[in-house]
Image 1 (cartoon, one colour):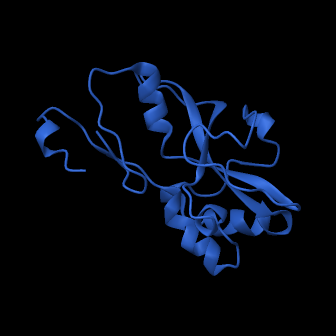
Image 2 (cartoon, one colour):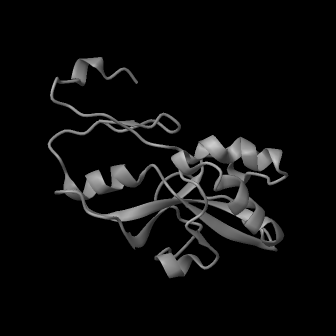
Length: 153
């Protein structure tokens, strides 16, 4: 993950918040994090939610999803909204179709996780969004991140 050989003086770097930052807080509040329990990466999906364009950069938001018992969904929102610098509270709870997700069993990035009876999908804005935008725009050069290491250049 050393990008030194590729770096040029006119490059710009971005530190992007990662939802992994709030997962311990969920666990500390009695809310299990399924992808951790199952030993997989978090499920991430492209949505139909447009991002605010910035110059040539435009595209749709990517979200991460964690299944949460319905009775704890509001608590999950309260806990994670204390982390506004790293995604904050969820952007959507419930029906994935309302944000353009057709099949929770087929994430665009990461791994699918099980969803149990009595659970609802809870979605947070995802740091993979800049990568998805870059894939739309196709810049001449882009260096992306490794999961949990959100330096984008």
